[in-house]
Length: 427
Image (cartoon, rainbow, N blue to C red):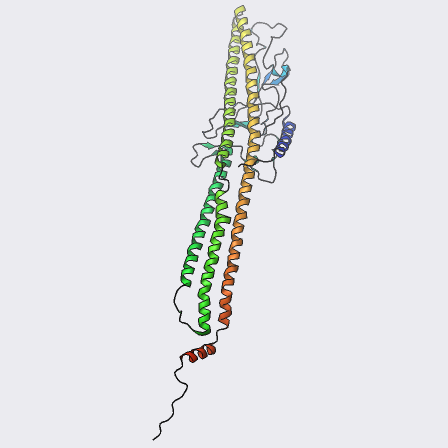
């Protein structure tokens, strides 16, 4: 079963991050004017200038307000903020509600016409996720400094080896888990092959110990030879026990570690994060659609204003009022879509942090599990060497006792023909 990281730790981590983001980006403008790309396409970067809209006023010094209610994007620094900025009526009034109270001569520019000023680009969108441009704004702080944590380094998508499609950063983490599972299985197969070698070796040693070769050797050397052949049988037993322990204490644990529902749990993670990315893509599409609608309404308002300059009529003034209302509504719709986009991206961010830390913990547990059982392999190997040494110790002792003179004595006593030596013949 999948284990989970401490929820309290994740909560404190995210809370600290949100506080840093609020301090760094309070009062910033939101800019999400980028192209929409499907997740399966290569990451294409689209950068545009942010736009702020000026409130209608008879004075050129009228205060300006951001299209996105002058609250900072939770991803203005590449990360999210769970803190929601309340929407005030004043902040949401992005276009003219009423014309200026004082009269203007016919042909003058409509006070409902929004004025655009270019500001420095600070953000970019890649595959529907908003990031800060390099070198813009305060430097981001890592969520877990000096740890090379998963939650800090897998936010962007990555091109596949062919370079035709992009792979989400979370998908890279999932592939790491699947690769780890495959490596674990291959290690188990390696140990199995080692066991087969041990079993075959034990079988051959046992067979060799029964060989009749040099069985007729006699004396102390014969005793040492007999003990040597017996030691092969004892050594075969040691290697057989070694192979059995390798199977039960190394191979089987490596093979069965996380077999139950592991891939199903990974698929749940995958589907959950992928669903959030789809929601984010949908929100981004809504932002782009609303932005286009606002641009169309603005263009329509400008056309009607130009018509008023050419020919003054009650019908033209009514058309301008209608165009102004539609433009205002389009601006409100765009702000609503931007807010929903930011909320969805914030949710995706938090789930990415939580889930990536869970995958990180799973990887630590996998490595420690394998380390533990490979160390058991070396322990068993040392034990086998010690047992093998014990099988040859009797052989060493008998070999030290081999005495050619003693062997000669024993052999002569058993095989002598006569102790009477020949003498000279008499005449």
